Picture 1 (cartoon, one colour):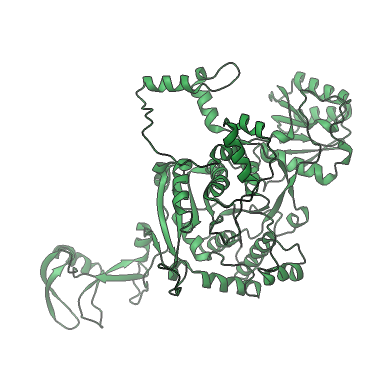
Picture 2 (cartoon, one colour):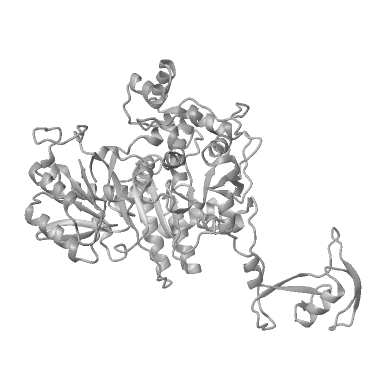
Length: 629
């Protein structure tokens, strides 16, 4: 099978449409268009109710937000070769990606489709003071937008106005969030979960938006995290804010439950003062409380010979069995009443369910997180109000993340999520991986001179939030490594870059007479970015490197059963070497060969196409050949 593709048509795969096409092929016309009314008729025959008696969230820009979710990526991905080649990073499976997270999510959509166990994000709260404004560099004309999203001229005009006016309205915020959440859902595993931090300003809108994207039935809970320990003093407010919200949804509630709900750390003072072979234990009263009922009988304290005629937690036979098993103790201090032992291993097996109130003592607070950053960086206020590691650690636990799971944070900020992943791995021995995404947001020298000066002077880098994220991960890894952790503490860096100017190609075939794009201006770095973008689009994880393959002096790139022919100069000699290698190299089994059309002469391309199509290789591999421009 031979086909041709263009680079600027890297679109997010619509898996839902693929499922419909597989199960309801008769609902598509000859042009591949889905016929909704015919689909409804079929479902109505099966007593599916299409009543309009329901509610949904609507806002100016909703249809535009849906368009943004389905539009092709307009960037390429390139690797930071120098950083990635360092010993601590070369084999790392952790990723830090610089760029607009909407673009990055599109790039990740194939390689990481349903591969992410947990997502945590801390998006803009749209408080009016957090500098959130909606910015959009897409240049649609009024007529184009009308046709693309199917709205009338007046509505299209209003949408274009707010997308170009740097709005921070609720509609602008929802338009910003919808496509990112839509794409995030497709990355989550069926047993995955997402957690989103937010404050009072947008929590109502976020809940309705999540109901629409993830389904109301997959709502897992609304955590209230007390972010500060002191009581605010503000005469202008009736209610002072001490808590933030964390809204949580699973991808599929039933599958998430079956996979096991994670538990937070045990609380209680576990010890083993009597050297019990079963390990550390804590205790609780055997006497029932005032609001409980139990069994009444007499118990004698063997230490002071006092007799207690009380209501107890279990039957007398149960008590005698526990006493014999050394599970009843009589403390020397206190009232002398019996207490029942419970062992750490038992509680770990039972688990301790998280509540929807997360206290600052257990899950960290703003001040503690600021202090941790200051300790790590050696300077205060390098980042405003980062989330505490303890908070993300708790979310990692209740999501039931385990060994080799991938954790995604596409509003990385200071990098707390990556830090928390590394720290928890060092504690429990697992090897979770993280993907962090952060745009290169400039640091305002007037609003945060400390951070600006630190990045410019200490790091010798462009003052952006991304550099803070990068340095946080590097320093956190170094600190964890001091405790002799043998886990993956490195990370690879990639970033988005614009597709080259004039790189447009919409013709069905490429001819030498066409000069739409000057291929001669491409550098080795440009070609590398194209390979990175294509391999990810073709389903290969960013953390995995392609193998450089020598075909008689022509260098090809191979991985994931795909062979990329990117360089100039491919000739008959190299074609012969390729065909021989397919037959003789047991580790070389390409099911797909992709050639960069701009780097091939038309004669070589025809020869390659015809031979791949007609060659009967000894392994009987069915090879698909694709030319991309």
